[in-house]
Length: 248
Ligand SMILES: Nc1ncnc2c1ncn2[C@@H]1O[C@H](COP(=O)(O)OP(=O)(O)O)[C@@H](O)[C@H]1O
Ligand SMILES: [Mg+2]
Image (tube, rainbow, N blue to C red; front, side, top):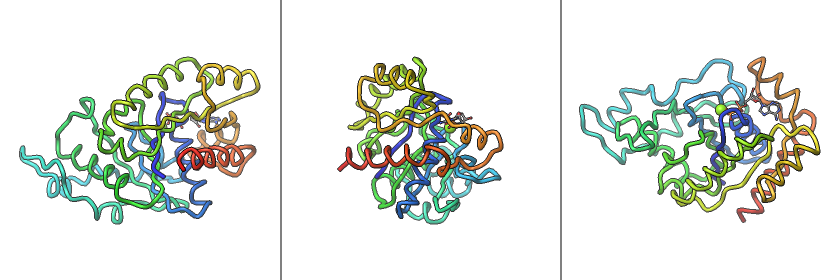
């Protein structure tokens, strides 16, 4: 299963990416979680105290593989990278990109070629569950990688603007060949929120994640997002099994 978690800033992409990864590990799956959002905070959500060194800082390696001095190799060799440069956090293999992705994905700098190729390789060639914590703009997934992604998991909250972002993402998804866009409703505080969301997204979501004081506290303290508190595990179970059902 290869999914990219997308949505408006602040809706809970990193939180849901961490929860999905942790749930996958609990299910006995090998999980690679990728922080591909410039606003890097997946590490912290998974429980890393110190910031993990992002791949983009491997300057010498990037120059060696993807070229420097004006010559960029667009398909650098990277198949060895995922087994060398990751941090294992609570059972999850974490890779932090430290994104460049500038210019709507059109940047042909060595850094972008390198990271893009790693993403491509992880999505197309590996057997692990891959969870990518993305940003709202998904065009840098590129068509080749997009076609390998099983699903985009669009996170929304009871807020009209997050739903507008999700609609834009659906249009972009079509452009890059992603067939499935599913929704997770986050920060749901009650029946009124549920009804609003069901009405606004006009489809059945993978699940509803409650607004959780425990998640808020973990965030305040820079601690791992808790899977085992309150209703969180139950809602992740639903999201996970709906994903598997939809993808099978
Ligand atoms: N279900 C939830 N209940 C309470 N707070 C949440 C929930 N989901 C996310 N948050 C909080 O919302 C903020 C943004 O979440 P984050 O995952 O960083 O969003 P994004 O990655 O989309 O920018 C964080 O402070 C996080 O702890
Ligand atoms: Mg984030």
